[in-house]
Image (cartoon, rainbow, N blue to C red):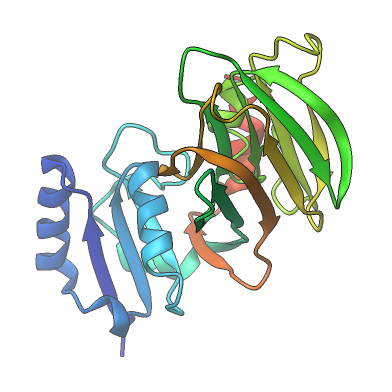
Length: 253
């Protein structure tokens, strides 16, 4: 008996039409019953799918029917069963964000790419950064700061001139966003096992929002970030087109 496949797609017409065609060819089942989940869309939809299915055992195989497809395989309706059977699995640990707001409420979220703190007003952000309980930077004045996983290092982090991290490396990228003081500080590499705390200085004057893979929390006073090693996302890639190859290729484009 073949693999049970659950097809899911973004709401874009090109993605929903692809889903309908693939279901006619390969049949479909519920996400909870699937041996493998095929996600049709772009990277944003892949992140949504991984978050939605994190409690399921089925890995996710993406096909690009969106704009950005770093986490996606090429779209082709032919030979899907063989592609799934020969695909290579990558396991990713997300970041856990705990955001404490100025009114004392606590919001938590997971991020596969990055957790970012961004200024939410005209004033630059003023932040203090601690690693494993030790203050490493008492004052950073910038547009914000982000902490990225290796898988997310080619996304917002790379656009902010952060480093690309090899998949499987035990480090995270802490990257400043348009640092004003200290002007030359661009960021640091942080051990994956470490916990990072970002304190917002003058939160009333300089409001800050925290974001974990597009899930935002406004008016934060403090954000704690750590790797959620107890959670693993399984992504499937065609042979020769896994994340390692994509990371290398990205640096020469």
